[in-house]
Amino acid sequence: MSEIKFKCPSCSTELEAPEDMAGDVVECPSCSQNISIPQPSAGVEVASSSGNNHNACPNCQVEMEAEAVICLNCGYHKGLGKVIKTDLS
Image 1 (cartoon, helix red, strand yellow):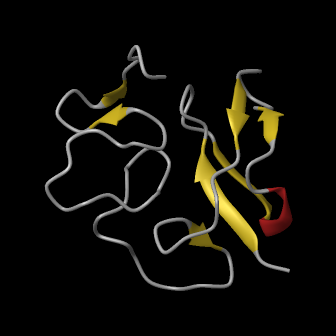
Image 2 (cartoon, one colour):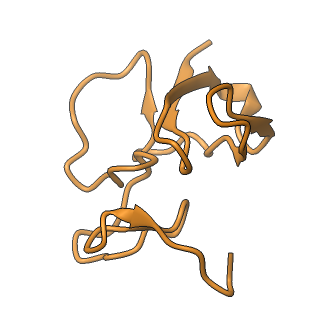
């Protein structure tokens, strides 16, 4: 089974999990923040795939629209260079 590679939105530790854990909430081993494992998609790097995704969120690697400023998966703001909290989070 393939592994999903992603980053913790709080501390940016690179993590990986089996694809069947997508959607599960786990504790980051580095900062203890509860995080949701992203769904596998074209924007989430899977260990068996190759190549770079030029429209991927720098924080969680989920595909973003080319003109998007905020990642809808983790709340990363490209202009500010950090995860922001919103009322919708």
